[in-house]
Length: 415
Image (cartoon, rainbow, N blue to C red):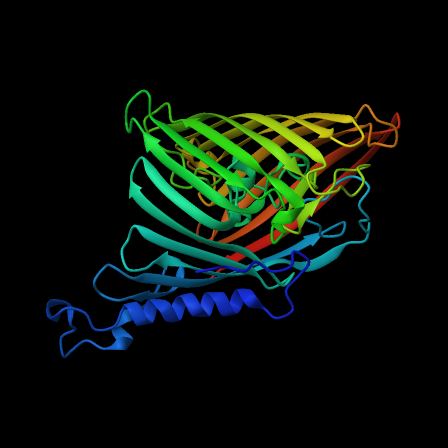
């Protein structure tokens, strides 16, 4: 079986919808008549196999072997500047206030044939592009193998879904350091479960061409992530301590990426370039990245932090770019401390910075800083919430400091 990935600039033929419908139809076929013991009773019908659950419309064949769900997620936003995801300095952004549907996603997931074989597909109807198309087989707790296109498991802030963020958008470090969505193959698992050495790992190869990219544009990237679950419990990739756990869950993580590509930056749009970097030839740039990350949830308190190092070497021109950056953020449901505080309300704060030391003429040669205060009102967890955040952004470029304020109000809704 072969899978064709479409252009990173937008798919006018809506291939993601066709793929998702095909997966749904495949589930129906596999849910057909089986052994006599599995045949439905006279009271059962196809209608009984459909229901509405926490992920959206669900289909269950009744045997536990095939389960599919289909959901829609919308994210509408008002901002005092143009609504832009993962923008880098120098990219054109309007200063005018804007109301927009920032994200609109169609999602299909579940398992086929047996619970160990899971699939997931996600399509962006706002920008008309296929984001995720992946299949995973779990051989054991210590080994799963995934193939397809998905958001690489490098750093927590990017792995966390945009629908499960503590703020309206990720921090300013994201466009500089994210590996983002790639085609590839990844092995992962959990070792030493519930012990002091409890560790989750990810090890695999990525195309290096970005979402929907042509693999001829890159030699590929190797990724490794080791996450020590020091409480013996795995903290999921979701921000805000919504479950308000009585037992702490935390992690300390190191991750690294190395390889060659024609790109130096990645986003949901696909492969791109850092500010001041010219469009590259295939495999022109050697990318080396390293990251340290911590995360922790207890009762209504949440914390996460990352520190990044990145080096990009131009194998043709010999120039080298070095970048460092990081962020730290914390949130709290103060109703856990004060009874009079509204239970659905969370308050949060984040600081972040990026320091690109290009060492080349014509590069960015500046730095970025962010201070953001945020609040969330959860109607139904992350599936229905209102977010308000206020940011103070500082851009230092060519020894000139530019400061701006940003206000965003966002409604996240899934059904």
